[in-house]
Image 1 (cartoon, rainbow, N blue to C red):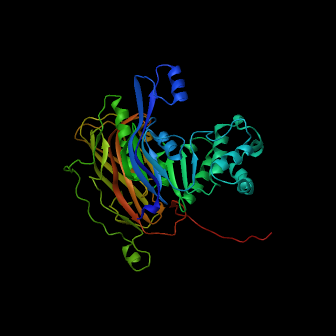
Image 2: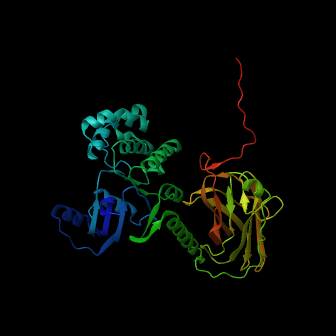
Image 3: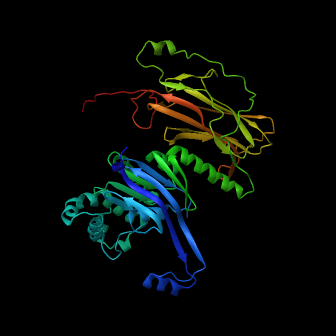
Length: 450
């Protein structure tokens, strides 16, 4: 791919902020441009290098203080890097912190013209698009009131509406959707999904589901360093695993990666291959292998304290037989068996079904069913959880089950073992509308006379 397709290029970008001993030093530094004596400096970013190509959708993740917002400000030109370079091609529309680019004394209408001009639009262009901007923001008569009277949600509405109408090549968003109502958030998500078809998206969010849903790629910043850059699903999963490990470390518990664990012996018998009773019907039709179920993969990678080991994950039919083929709509049981490596108290077993981007489709756990009678599992014993449900109809593509065994409560628990992609299923049906389809009990179309 040629260099002409690169729209953002960061080379060894670093940003250092001085920590002044006295306010006077800060003032003198601003007035003279000289660096005055100070004991400490803070490196917000260190040697960050990456490229974004035209049409990519990239999420930036990391804890508070990891440098995400600082990096976006450098890319948007509102901060200058201390070291390295950041080159951006084309028009950029940015939603950074609330109110950025707005004059609080101006009305919303006046700020539309101010902000639009800052993003490269001419006055005539803004006038032609003003009605559409106002409709998108949907803040009514507040458009003619000073923005200093706006709520945080109204700030975001107006800022996003402007960004959506400036014909940007690149859209940069920093946690803008963390405020505001759900309807507007959905409107913004629809716009961003459409924008991905024609432009480049750089998206910062603490919502891992939004990152995996919107982005093909993710960049993980950790304490000012670039920790990982890769497929959004893989980077988000690694990030979440480490955050859980750090959270449990505060309680003196050690969580390790299960990615490189060697396969250990399992007490379960090998799964018997069962031919689905509808296979002959499917073979004779044009609808073949609508949902294939693959074997449990114990070495799929994950994390946990190591207090348990996932021994089996299987989809079963109503007779308890292993399924290798589904049409969708059947009553199935997801069985998860886990061996206790140590004595476990207040055990919870759960799962998520995810699409190929890592977006969680649905999931559940055993916590509420055992609320009044907690389950304890001794070392060497097997915890067996079964979830019975009607299988949804799936879009074409691959899906995976994440499964886990934890101890504690719904709100405060320790992951003993979490396996990513423990069971893979593949759907070849392409007529589903939406993320999943629900089997219909009945569909009717009637004509009534008045």
